[in-house]
Amino acid sequence: MAPRSPKKVVLAYSGGLDTSVILRWLIETHRCEVIAFCADLGQGEELLTVRDKALKTGAARAFVEDVREEFVRDFVFPMLRATAVYEGGYLLGTSIARPLIAKRQVEIALREGADAVAHGATGKGNDQVRFELAYAALAPQLAVIAPWREWELDSRSALIAFAQRHDIPVPVTADRPYSTDRNLFHVSYEGGILEDPWAEPPPKMFLLTASPEDAPDVPAQVTLDFEAGNPVAVDGRPLGPVELLERLNGLGAAHGIGRVDLVENRYVGMKSRGVYETPGGTILHAAHRALESLTLDREVLHLRDSLTPRYAEMIYYGYWFSPERAALQRLMDEAQQDVTGTVRLKLYKGGISVLGRKSPRSLYRPDFATFEADQVYRQKDAEGFINLNALRLKIRALRDRRG
Image (cartoon, rainbow, N blue to C red; front, side, top):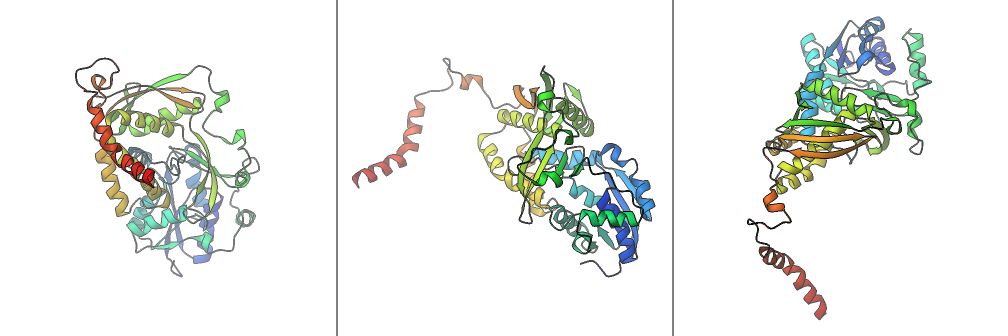
């Protein structure tokens, strides 16, 4: 629960309607100093005016910090090593950004001597949980202010009216009647016209990807190199995390890769519809799985795959800084030690095909797998193996026959 009169608050600020209104509302309601913090996660031109807008709206100070390298290296890549996908379709682009934003927000709050932090997540969504679990794990002494759970501004029209009264610029939304969240890994869309799960997303909505129908008629090929589960090069060219993801985003977007439309289960108990564009991430997942098929032991792969849904839930639900996620990450990373090699993919009109994979750590042995004559595998040995595994089935059948 937030204190009655916080003296200094660090607000997770995006420059959009909600957080702009929140900034002014905090000043007026709590009579406190507000510091705006915006994390540069790859939003692009959206950030050009954020600092000036925060200061004009009343922020005492405003920080816009480039955390793209940390985001990809320390958040996206560990998630990729675990092959995390929520409910079979969502690659967790928004979910994985929140713990990093909260981490830097807390660090600024401690540095600036703030006694509270605030966010713009609604009381219906997942983000409120993600932010506040991170705050609790990193700085439990800070008070938390969640305006959407306190104020009487309960609709978009109420927010717009508040903004107009306080000369806060309101984004034109008639052409884009839905909310978006963008970072280097993805763009998400929800709300507005997307709240009808029968309605097709408007083609002009998508910011990154070409529609598969309009993608080039000639497929593209790309090779990716991995070391211990981390992507390190594209087409033989070593790249840092940010450059690598940017390169794959551009390539995937041009060929219509990475669009997903799904209805997901929020942590708070309701279903919601989300539409996502994750071009580079989709390519990375496909290549990573292809290389794992070559390099991971069968039982390690199956064990890892049985734990992946739980790991994805931890990220989606906001438990990035939990001890269970850290423990599971160690297991995931241990399983990745042999995931080194190269994968070749074909990209064509929204689809990804694996053309080839190779690895110095490969467990694939042609001399064992061949259908031709070989000297290393005695086919007769399979008879005893089958008989032992069939024994319980035979006993059951004999019992039932007697009955």
